[in-house]
Length: 70
Image (cartoon, one colour):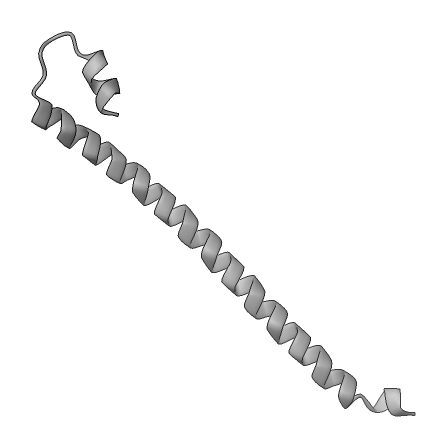
């Protein structure tokens, strides 16, 4: 990002300002990555929980199903 900003300019640029601008751009990108990762993790946790509950429910209903014993 620093190189991109540096090459774009036709006048001499302050390095501190250039670094600050690159840091802000990187922070925006990082927030997107964190948000996407959090969404994926949340969805995976919900699917895993749902599967565990479903399996437990099926185990319980198979044991106590009165139609299967006759």
